[in-house]
Every structure is written in structure tokens, then in C-alpha cells.
Length: 464
Ligand code: UD1
Ligand code: CA
Image (tube, rainbow, N blue to C red; front, side):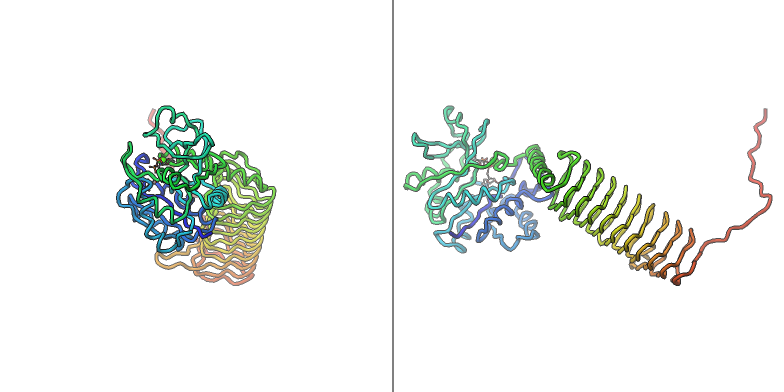
């Protein structure tokens, strides 16, 4: 059966105390509403309808940049008159793109951890019915309570503010996630009234309308309370972030990565781990990260959009961004690989070394306190401590090329564009402005002078 998804995202979220719409606040580096969109995409709807309101232009602008942007369509809810009113704003678009028999799944943009599997089962179970996803909570206060008759059939939902003391004791609550056919929504939504404690058009009132029309009301249970928890303030945001991260940590461990402390690793993207990998405390993974077998990552490292070869060690306090590192390499401690680095196997990048947009060949080493940018370095090269590629004249970037087995003495400035031929040696402290021939030695520094009998200035003895 064709399926359409509506995501309610018009609420102001005043308890966030934020200039940003609530649904754009992030969990694991991704807006709340994008988590919901990603879950919805997995059950393959025709379209995803976003109902936006408060600061909606920000929501639209942000969502126009996500991978699934072309699957989204928008309806504005200029005034937030309730969840029923919000869904009604999407009806014209729904009727344009879908036929009456389509199922419509209603999700909340501020309930980010909903799982695709839960949605898939729920939608399947809701065919020919009005489906309500419920959850049973120890503390149900604040939620709409599920009313059932003696045969355990759902007959209504009563909001906290409209509930009697007896109804308030009910533990089964409405998660807000519902599913029914488009033609039923067309029938029921215009019948909602705002005659209730909050003066709002409650979507939940369609349950009583379904019962009156003899449409069966079915329910699905969420697998965990966390899945259907909403974000209303920054405390809840932080709590869901931790829950999300714990799940990611569990997944990494399940897939073969030992974590020094599962509570101190953060995944903001997707990580594929090899077997027997290790991540020490405070490692942050961002974007797409792929670890080969036995990769070891020291404490306080950030790995963003990178591929790390088998048996490579990333030592403490290192950052690797948009780069590829081969096998058996050693990076850090305190190394920074900026975007565009391709490091071959058995390379070494040591402490306080910054490398940018450079290719470094097998077995080459840049061990201490250097900057290597826009460079092509061959195999077996040794770049001495404190070497700097001067790749920038304030306007243009230039390339440095070092052939295989080159040896660069410490504290050398390589003024690009410059090429050092294979097996050449550069003496320490040189400023290299011309190409160096293969197999030669280049020394470009002031000559050492000798001044015999030189006396250092002496301090006068104090008068006693
Ligand atoms: C709603 C449900 C309640 C349920 C609870 C679960 C109704 C009447 N009540 O209550 O039964 O237990 O969610 O969290 O549906 N929204 C709009 N436009 C509006 C109003 C809300 O887009 O005019 C969006 C909000 O951004 C939010 C969602 O709808 O994503 C829920 O709104 P909220 O005000 O939080 O509903 P609750 O009162 O919590
Ligand atoms: Ca809410």
C-alpha cells in the first residue's frame, strides 16, 4: 500500500530558550528532524511532508542541504493551533500527490530516536485501521492517556490537562505517532474542535471519531521508551544524546572494537570498524570513518571522514580529517592531518606535525614539529625536525615535490614551488629556493665563522 509520511515540526520549543527552531538542535551532530527523516526514509514512503512554523525558513534552508532533500515537501502552519491543525495544513499537498487509499504515517520532528523497524511493523499493523503507537510509562504525567473499554479496545485519548484524576493514573500513553488512510484524515480533520482545556485542535480526537465511524483502532507498542521520547528542553536533548551514543558504542564493540570506556566515545556519523580495533577514552568519530583491522586510537583523538589502514596507531591528541592512512602507520601524539592527505603504509607522522593536502610515500617519516602542505613525498623520505614547506605567498599555493629516499635536514624551509630529486640530501637549516638535483647535497645557510679569543661582555662586580 502506498505510504506518505507527515512530520510535525512547527512547534516553537520555547523551553529550549533558543533562537534556533527546536527541530534543528542536534543529536550526534545531526538535526533532530533529520533523524526522523532518516528513519522515515527506510520505510520507503512516497513523500515526506514537513509541517513547519516557527522560524520555518531556517528549517527549510537547513533541510535543503541534506542528502534526502528531494524527497521532502513542505506545508506551513503559520499559527500553532494544535497537532490536529498541524496535520490539516499538510492535507492539500497530501491530496495533490497521493490517492485516498494511501496510508499516512504521522511523526514528530522532536522525537529523534524512533527506529525504522518499529515504524515498519506499526504501519503494517495499521492497515485498514487507525493505528496509535503507544508506550507504557511508570510516570505518564504530561502525556495523552490511552482510554480502553472492557474488551481492551482503544476508545479515546485524553490529554493530561483534560483528564480526570482516575484517567491520570493510566500508564499507557500516546507517543503521538499515528497512522491511517488519507481518506479518513480528509473526513476527520475538518471535524475537530478546539473545545478543550488548551483551546487547541487535538489530533488525538480523531480516535473518538474513528470509534464513532466504526473504524477499528489498533495499537503498536514502541520497543523502548527511549525511542519515543521527545525533546522539550536541553536536559532531555543531552539525555537522548547519551542514549544514542551508548547504542553506537555498543555497536562498535559488537563489531570488534574494544572501547576503553563506552561512555567516553562519541560517534557523529558512521564508523565501520575492523576486528580487534581499540579506541581509548574521548575519541570522537565524525562523518564516515573506516578502520582496518587492529587499528588503535589513543585518548582524545578526532577522526573525521577518513580511512585508516590495518595495524595503524593513532596516538593521543591527534586529529585526522578527510584523509587516507595506509597500514602500519604511526600518527601522533599531537599530530594534525588536515583534508586531502594520502599517507602510504609504514609512514610516520610525529608530534606537532601538521600535514595538509599531501601524498606521502611508503616508509616516509615526518617525525617532529613540521608543516607539510601541498606536497608530494616519495618513498623512504626523512623530513627532519622543524621543516616547513613554504607553500603560500599570501595569494597562491605552490607544490613541493620530494623524490624517493630524500633526506631533509632539520629546520629546513622548502620554498615552493620546488623539487628535490631522488636520494638528494638537504643540509640542516637550509632555505631551499631552487630545485635540488637527484643524488646531490644542497646546503643553503650562512657559513659558520670563527673569531679567536672572543670575550663575552662581563657583568660589573657590585661595589662592596
Ligand atoms: C502530544 C499529544 C499527546 C502525546 C504527546 C506525546 C496531542 C493533542 N497530544 O502532546 O497525546 O502524549 O504529544 O509527546 O496531539 N506541533 C505542531 N503544531 C502545533 C502543535 C504541535 O507542529 O500546532 C508539533 C510539535 O512541534 C511537536 C508535536 O507536534 O513536534 C507535539 O506537540 P506538543 O505540543 O509537544 O504536544 P503535547 O502537548 O506534548
Ligand atoms: Ca511534547
